[in-house]
Length: 134
Image (cartoon, rainbow, N blue to C red):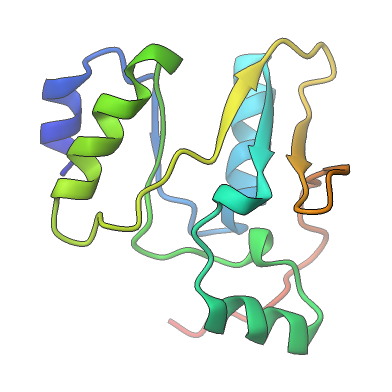
């Protein structure tokens, strides 16, 4: 899939596996390294209902859960739909989604636009939510 993505959109700026610290840590690392902010759309995040339910029962944020075998990509906004099409055509890429956008932000924050219409800062994980078993 990655080879097809790079061939389709050579201006892809960022490819990352959000294993340690999940989406929250990976995107906070990105904002700190790049100097931009990110705005995520909660309704666009492809969190499976079973995962969401388990996180609610355990009282943990799904954004901080390790995501083995997942991929984050950052590309120019005008190229996002073409890149998404390539990702969805690949085996195991059918749940790929555009989850947010980069924004100018001197504070370099990751913000989440919630389903309720509010906004919250997605912070670095404090400690470990779940022990790593592999």
